[in-house]
Image (cartoon, rainbow, N blue to C red; front, side):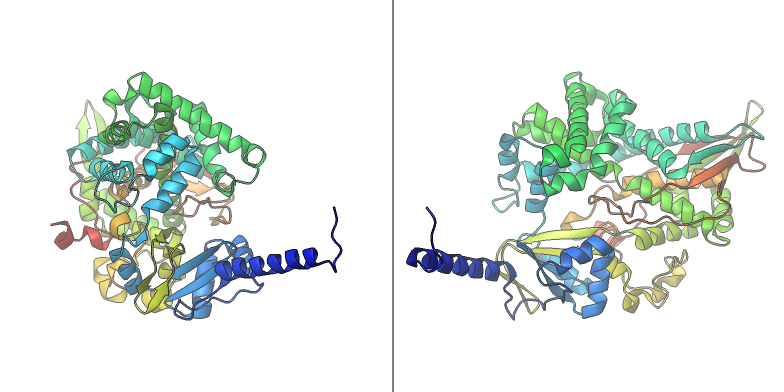
Length: 529
């Protein structure tokens, strides 16, 4: 049956459709004057989507400069987003961690990304935000992560295992005397760090020792956005989903074979939390694929940018080498010269190395802390509506000239030296690891690993670009889960043994991991104690 445009039934349906569209549109795009001011968009409704697709993580910086507001509202199709741009307001957000909550978002992300079963999703969603107390899989998984990664003898064990794997990779990389080796710098770092990290976490039965599994993981990681979008996944996300399944099956076999018996405390604690809540083994394996994102995705890019910027910044490499050389112990064993580097000693005696590393993170990080507004609430004088999302992009803070000075766009390796403290903002303005209750628990492990790679690389190897000059690659395709920019293209380099060090044997040690490098406010002695 068809209706004519003049019939009462047609008019009734049309009126209902217009009314429904009005209320849906108002719900999606309506703006209360008590809310943070609206950010302008060039195209109604979809302008922010277009801006994000074109400028990626720099779009938030552009909007922040354009509006000048400490917090603003982005109206997106189907979702309202508040974006915080000032450190004081970020601290206020972090104090309201139950009302402005991260766990519900992480649970949704984990279930979608990992392909968890409905049963596992229900277990994870029980008391997901800890509103009823510190119990449930969500809360206990956080506790397991913090326990496994806090400075302790257990973290020392994991760090030492990682460092020895880094040493092996560098031994293999170094060519014979008078020879050179050509490699893609990023690919080499990613392979070396993947091996070192996963062996230290998962032990001698590490699933990633199978290169096919490691390659499948990176295939999965490269397709995260297509999985998250969820549009025709059997077509649009076919390859990353197949790769995810392959890695999950490897973890399932690992658990069944007793791989955890010689694994790190971190891996054991995470597994036990899930077993305690009766998560099916297939889903434990799926969630561990997601957990691998956290331990792997950002370390290689951070090491890549460190080596690239240290080598390309005039005079910096020589100055850092002098610091590292001064910390290197030399001995003779069976007539062979042995050079020993201790990572704890480096953290205590190489201020330029540490300042340069921290500046790399400021310069190259683009992570965003995300919260869900659990109920209508006020942040300072601004009304935040239940169901909206709140973002705190680190890049807005890290690129704010009113905080960091007129050279904010430049890589300044001496910015974080102790004597420069009066020329930079408070520690809370450094957001590479987030902050508050969701501060990255793996920051100490990652720092030890990156320092081990770059310090020993610099101490024993010379590197030059194949093309004759250093060129920073673009980062437009950085993945959705990344916190540090990922290069769109690799840099081909030529590696030789450092002149005068060709016949040296190298050893890397770690005294104690409780000698931390305090980069964030939460690591200050007053707060730790």
